[in-house]
Length: 193
Image 1 (spheres, rainbow, N blue to C red):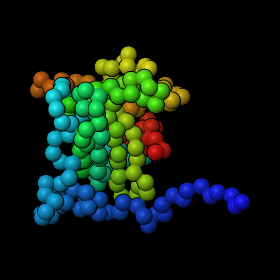
Image 2: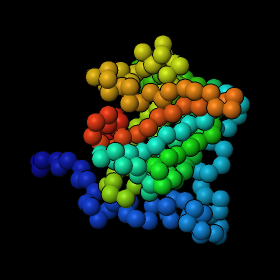
Image 3: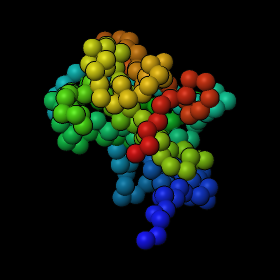
Image 4: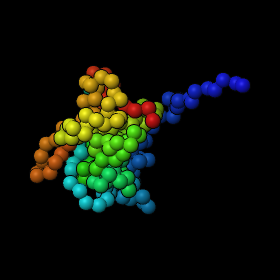
């Protein structure tokens, strides 16, 4: 029997390229047609729940903002069901992104126990061969975070903090901020999915 080869990664020619915004968010490039509004630009989580804002910025290894990234957000609704909670946005020139959604409920983890409320983020930009997967946890869910199946698989507790968004109030609405660092000091934890 032949040895199995590990799966091969994409080559540099298969990166997202300079056309990420055109393909994923054409309206931002002034392209109109049957896909306007852009897929994922509408409401993220269906149903009711606590309205929240998610904001942040994406930085490269030299701490420069990544202005050509696209961020997708996937989440459960307020009752912990994965109905259709997703959205997509392109980063601004300063690397900023923003979502309006509802705070997700808890869903069962691989061990059957409830995971902490969280959002899944997928990031793609020029030069990234494979989309980056990470999570956003909420700093006001410290008890749930302490027992989360995935968060506690990160051995170094200091690295866990790269996934925890800080809560503030902006115009009477809970706003959670998480900056994402693609590499270097304070690099965000990414998952190989």
